[in-house]
Length: 327
Ligand SMILES: Cc1cc2nc3c(=O)[nH]c(=O)nc-3n(C[C@H](O)[C@H](O)[C@H](O)COP(=O)(O)OP(=O)(O)OC[C@H]3O[C@@H](n4cnc5c(N)ncnc54)[C@H](O)[C@@H]3O)c2cc1C
Image (cartoon, rainbow, N blue to C red; front, top):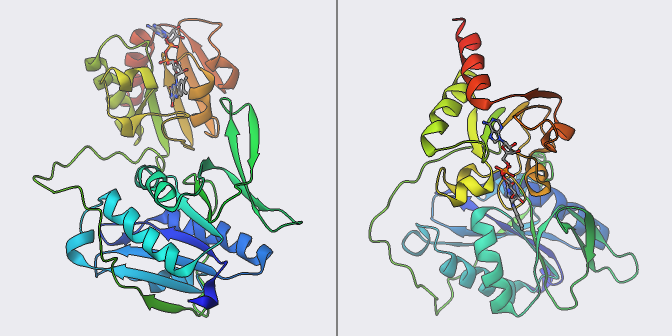
């Protein structure tokens, strides 16, 4: 293990035995940091037996540390995963630990930081290395994305969660070699969750959607999302929501676009009855083409829209649907 002391370690998230793409993004950015520091790049993989760790090596990991077991890791209990990752960190002693800012990573990361007694910079959008002391500079937007904070943790490992879709995935290199090191499960596990019944929640791939039709508080009732759904379906897209509607229970959190929700980059974003608050814009500003429908001509959403329609969404959307159906 001494070989890897001071390395950059990325947490390779997996979902039902399939490696999450954020892990490949972390290998890309983590690899860049490791090269700048002149240290090794390690992936820590925890999960059921079926996962194939070789893909992490092909994507640049110098070594993959794995703890695999079906019983403990068959469901995503952050407590047992956090406990196991802490065990691996103590074995390997990385200087830097990177975790994807997915729902799971955002929940597990703080537990890991707390158990290790280190700091954690959440939701980083860039990383750099201090040329003087080799420390990790963790860069993230702050104050509703108005400034970029540069943060240097004083204690080790320097830990950060990194936004999903912020970096490209590390490319595959069939010739890249690395070792796979099996680590035993920690002796004492903090297992606080017992699965009584599995309820499948609605799945929506907002982040990868090419068209997103978002509803804001201009919508009067939950039922009105049927109209947005119809428009989204006609365009082969999905439905998003502003935060107040998610808080009111109109749609689940998986649909929330914005600073505290998902960042989307669709080809087409249609904002219906959304005012365009900074926290909402933070989640959709990278859309390729934005259409805003709002009855208030001074709504800030029009400042970021490529096409603005000043009007009542209850008239505009049915008309759009009619046109798309060729009626
Ligand atoms: C820390 C923090 C994090 C946040 N994170 C998020 C986030 O992730 N996502 C997010 O969305 N918000 C977030 N917010 C909330 C954000 O500040 C705004 O309050 C929210 O985005 C407003 O939602 P809205 O545009 O749907 O509602 P409103 O601001 O109330 O706007 C409704 C709009 O609908 C228009 N309208 C009304 N009726 C019609 C009609 N019939 N036809 C057409 N237009 C109509 C109105 O003119 C108005 O512009 C966050 C806030 C904080 C403090």
